Length: 283
Image: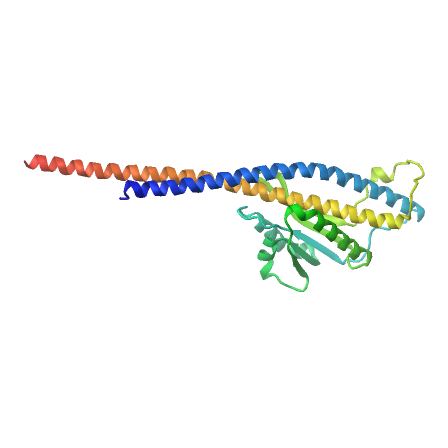
């Protein structure tokens, strides 16, 4: 049997682990709420930019006698897969990789750009000429990275390198429910309620083509930023749940350790009492 000192050292170590986990859980929960607030503002901005793009396209199409200028019959596609670097998130990042493995034939991903440290780890066995890996910066620096990436993607589209840009990421429905989402960043969907409205002759400073290029870059940037925020929300939500379960498990270990120690102590005390009874009976 362990001595009381040994037992106390074990319980104290479990308590230290429990306190550390609870501290990390509080930090992750606070970060989760902060990211959700940021997303609320970004989502509104996405709607504004999308509406502006749709209006410009309606003007452009009307100048071309309603010829649709958006969609290509080619299939030069880029698929961006967004992961992260946060650990202690359970099977979160594996969800993305499993989705990729199950649907790679059906989706025909084309060229693949995997973003994030965990993506590089998970896709390490799937290295082909059609896959590229890049790290993501910390969230404090993500806005600069987003603008650079949006500019690069816009140039790819303008040069005809890619006709479609899809993005696969994790979307948080709730703290306990993170799902795979796959959306098309380009071609940009036109809002019918914008294009069908007769809102008068527009006053435009500069060419529509120049404005469209600027708006496409802005559209890509705000959507990428929103998706990176959403991925971070999913990661922190998963981490919060994982840490909560870990804290509960640690409390259970402390409870079990105390039960074992008390049971062993009762057993030894009982054995001593029986020995004493036997000695007294022999006398």
